[in-house]
Image (cartoon, rainbow, N blue to C red; front, side, top):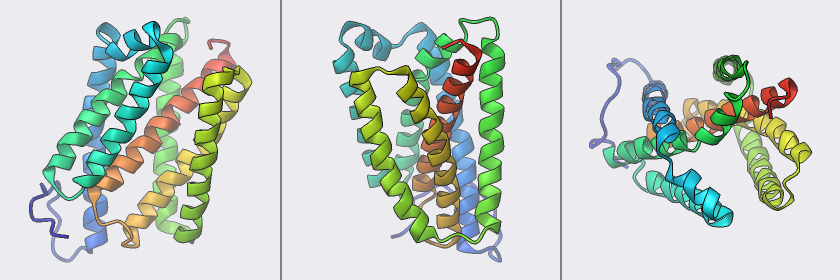
Length: 231
């Protein structure tokens, strides 16, 4: 597949391997994607049709969320070699930022809300850098880890859907803990997959890592809120 119509986010010389070029572009695009995510979170505090929909009809709101999430992921993957994919990724991250509003609003209700959010953000960053470093140094069976993550994704999705009906705080906390483990491993797998040449699109790689970081942050925040009694 030709990459001629993609924006080059790096100024890397010809002596660097193709995999390193893709990884560098992935990190730069990933950093860029958090700008609309942050903007979406701010806008969502003042105007959030998703929350309005959840308040008026919970199940319609849930269906709308899944439709947006999987629909945008599909569209981004269909355009994973073009600048259209970059634009769609920015739209996706903005929307996901808006959907952060509920958990951020709950976290900020307590006096230590700001500290909880900051702690979750710092822990997320630390885990990301640790997993990215491990992906370079550890001896990883990428295929086996990918299969494990595929099974884990199915198990987690079943748990998420089940808890939409059960609404159990214990199950929600358990899922948050599993998401922390799953998302951490997903970051390591995706970085390693790029390094080994299994992923040739920085757009697709950035999408996967963004989702992992997003789930990692929200899960850590929920755990911290539960431990502090602010959930």
